[in-house]
Image 1 (cartoon, one colour):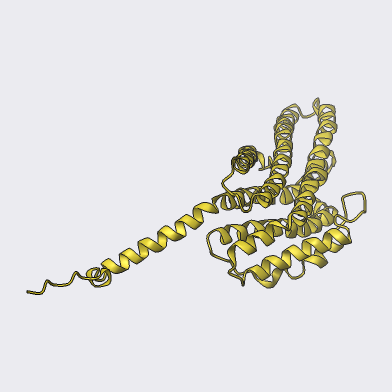
Image 2 (tube, rainbow, N blue to C red):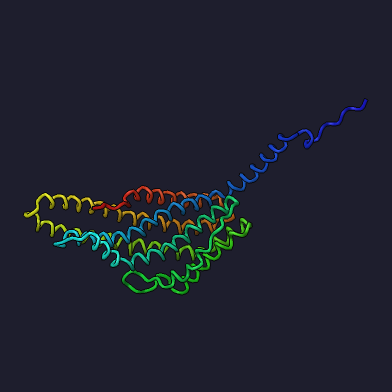
Length: 310
């Protein structure tokens, strides 16, 4: 008597069992690939967090300028017109507001860089719109506060624009490892972008905070001179000025934390580039852990972004 033949794996595993096995095998294969690229994803996630905390500094530079102008008018003017003072303050600070829009484009480049690295690590690629096409024009005429020198010279601007164009081009490609290598080879452009953001944080945002701190001291003197006539109002304004001074000092610490995070980002890009074929090495893991600590410190300090409002 002929023994029945043993069923094949394909016939033994009927749907949905066969489909479940195929899905499991696929997830194991993809999961193994994803775990190997985990350092890339870690770097990308920390860079995204860092970039988010730059955005309030753009608004903070403008608000420092307008608040300073409004505060002076509020305390020094004999007849205070809130609407007229606000309009005058906005006009005085228009150049700073315009510069912040251009700098925002640089932060967008860094954020897109992080998003693209994360997407490549997960085998998913984003699609970017054409609003980034005018980046070169926006940055080309941008000058440093007070100095008049361009934020990016022609050579640096060319590298930044090249990086931006590359990010858009990679959105149509699916060559994971080669695309990662190509992005990490743009280390110089990433350093140029992050250096420009760091300089803005120090030269514009922190400089505005320091101007406000100096003005607070002058305003306290003016309040003291009027205290005999209006003691209750003077005490109220002294309290507000004290609160503002404390918060401005805390907001200065954000710049220190941001600069440390940027320097750690630059070291992490260099480490990833050097270890692209050896992503599991301890040296890279240590560097990325340090980057994460600096970003966490920045996030903790960022609670002091919100200015005191009169």
